[in-house]
Image 1 (cartoon, one colour):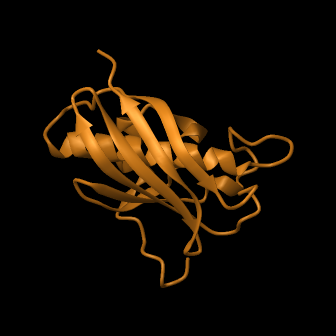
Image 2 (cartoon, rainbow, N blue to C red; image 1 turned 180 degrees about the horizontal axis):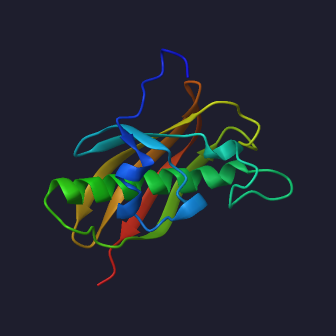
Length: 151
């Protein structure tokens, strides 16, 4: 990893137990920073030949929305943990809006992905986030995600 890229402060083991994404489906490798409103996560799973979303044609960029959604899940879980919750409330992704992709495939991109999410609104019923995914400082995906917490 080049010196210019910040190293994660939280490894996958520090948050994987807080989210429902298990095994290879837990796509994020670590969290660089997070606060009450934002998260910066990283991943290199997009190049894995065993990626659970990969087809015979590779990993399509549309799956970057899942990276953004997982960043929102990790952020919500870390917020809940910081607020003293012993277990975060389950969430369900119900909407993706304004998704923009600037590449067709991501499995051909060497190195890591930087995944950013910002919480626009959160309450007991759900949350609204924006997300963006960058590769080598270039935005390759962005959009908005809505999550609900089922009663």
